[in-house]
Image (cartoon, rainbow, N blue to C red; front, side, top):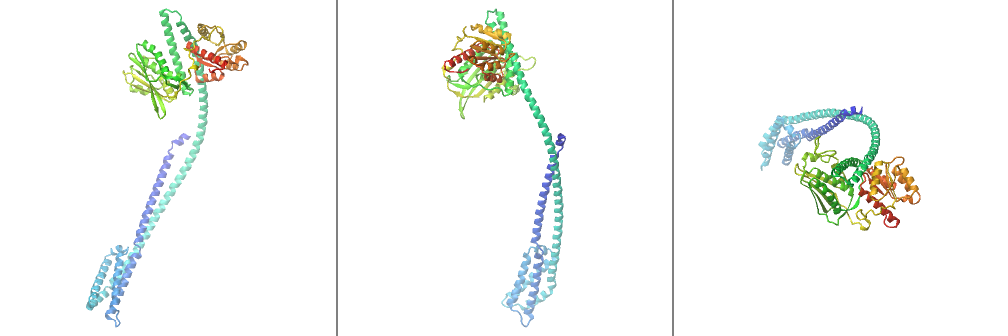
Length: 619
């Protein structure tokens, strides 16, 4: 219903009516202005401006004739000065007639113009007769006769003026009536347009109420859809958490056992097969990590964990990692860094390493021959903010302009198609760009086909002071001598393969662990006997690891303080946050690597020892 009303161009109709009304008002104003000008013109040439000068001229003409007659024939003639005054008054009346607003219209009449010209001639002759030292009586006598004969024409001058005045009044009346009629029609037209506008606005108001009702219904539907989307999103998060656990749990066993197998005496063929299997498992794990990271970024569930990082040492580790990988493809890998050795920054080393791993791995993958260079630069503060630039340059296959425009799109691969040469699902670069922007920076790329590519990571640099070396133990500085037969370790793990892997790994470290299948059994074991360290899986039957951890922390006595290291295949952000909230001391994601395991053990045991001795505490 609403859609049908919306499709009708009522707004166009109202707009047209409003424009028409405005045009009518403009026309009315223009017409009123024209009428005003017309009235002004008529006022300028008013009736009395036509009739009065003519009437006064005729009157003064007769007075002059009478005075001249008295001067020539009367026993008591007027004085010459009086006669001259009457002539001067007559002359002034001629001037008034010429200067009056209605003279132009009056003088258009031929008889009037001729009569007025004759009066002027009479005045000139009278002036000539009176101007000499002696009055020219014969000239005045002849003039008197002619003036008497011209009296009829003088009277006609007044009659013509009266006729012209009457005609002017009639024209003014007709003009005012015509203008009044036009104003009446225009006013009626405006009234009609106003009624149309009022009707249109009323109709529009009705439509608007209908639209508001429809919008309320639509809003309710959208809220319902939003709630469903939230529920679906929660279901998606739960699905991803479960999938992460279900996929990483066997990965933990596969990759762990492969790493242990690799350390045993093997033939050349067996070693090659183990390496291939290990690489394949690692590649599959990277795909899983990318999918989980992409989902976490979409939901805003990735939080940066800022640490104090030694920048040049961090870059040296990256170089150490990738030099042998590049050498396997006969590529030269080089790091060119101008970073000073005393520069420490605040950064999330895991995410920064993830970005560089993606960029460098791609460079090695898409470079069949030549070299890959990692450059590190630090730029001084601009507007109070220093920047660092990490650049990865290769001599690989390069990319076209079209490929560059789509490079950071999800699932996009420059080498696409069923017969593509390079593997991957096309998430690494988008994840890297999203992480860089979360850090306040950006990633740019320059490339040309067959001439290589250059990826540039620019990040704001937060300078930190170097940490106290006395409280920064590392695996390299603190060997795992803490593990000995006196250390009691409990492992809560429900997966048999992972139990076997943990048993073999701990055995190689010189320790025999106790195992249980669920969180409830772990709680009972802690309550029955003291343990120095607990490895707690998160997802387990009967009782999950978080519930078991909270139960242990609520126990009375020293059992509540036992160090707990969470082992989980769930790598989503909320899993780590929930584990820390439950009271774990460290968090290790599956598949477990020996270096990470040793580092976590050293960390929690050292922290526990320092806490018991009243020194530095941490986890």
